[in-house]
Image (tube, rainbow, N blue to C red; front, side, top):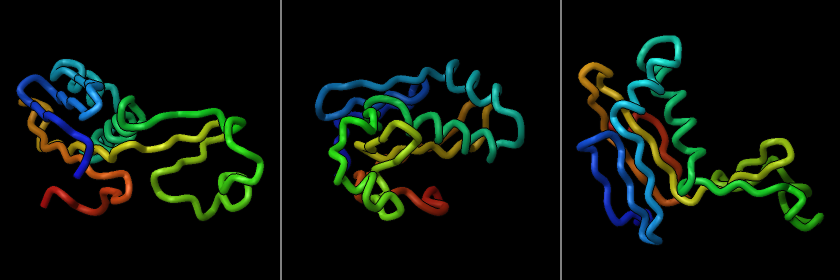
Length: 127
């Protein structure tokens, strides 16, 4: 089970984690983010989900220098678990996978999903 205490979509996306951390992207903010991305709704959704996944509390970012020299990020970076992302001089560690499927922007209509870090979200999960 993902570490979520509450999800509310009355005014955008509100997620309260079991550790007390809260993420809230209001409906106005969501629409602005979507409209700032060129392309069709699918491209806007992909860009939004990439941004969403990188937000606290869903991902923690650490300098790669904090890892020991024999850590897997150095010795075997091609085989990192899907929840550990090497990005240049930084390592992102997913604490929970999160994504949104948008049905429309006006009116704003969407479905969120949250998943344990060990079980990445894949495919057309909203079908």
